[in-house]
Image (cartoon, rainbow, N blue to C red; front, side):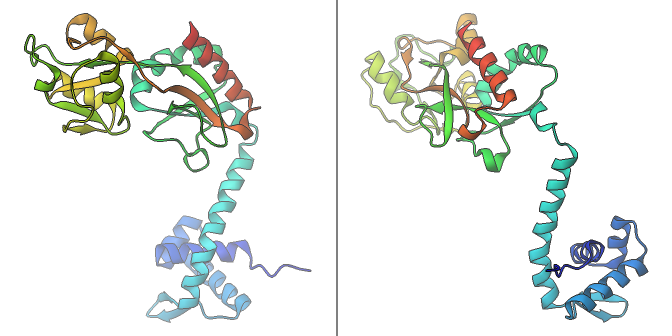
Length: 290
């Protein structure tokens, strides 16, 4: 049975007029004359047998039927465009790798090492996005990601990259010799609510697990806050090792403790056979073990 679908040109003209609110701008976008766009609108109205616009002083005012039709049509045209672009670039998808990273892990540990991967695989283009929570691969468009947790996420393959040591640090200008940790404001990381409890339990410090204090969304901000003398914070040792070695920060309250969770490379189980994912996974795990 023949499909009852208007011409694509008529649909494109209608959608452009609805989006721009005028024929002139729609004609410029479509590289058509104004009269050609108006004719296509007329052809569409003849096809659907429903008035789509009222003509008022050289203006086209959309009817309620037109508004409802446009609301349904625009997403379909967007999908057709996206699939067409995907088809045009067919075969190139395996050469673009979109990687989701935790901001501080990316900037302080992984990105300084990424040159090794790009040198080994110059045919793969890396795109980097950052986020604090678990990545939604379908919504974010990411191929794989680094996440912190227990390694158990539904529907994904997870490979442990490394564990984590945490330590309580403070700026030397803010610290008073012999003062207990309870004498200073405690800084908190919103995505690591158990960090203080983990470190306190391992260090044996006589202090409550929970104490009020400023909260931060990422470690970069928290590190700067500690350097500025806002208080004491429990931070991953790998992020502050250089600061401790240079004396820019101090760890006078006790040694490092092992976090209960770790960093994992994760990707959808359905993509386990992807060449670009396999190459990056193998390179990253080898780099972490080196």
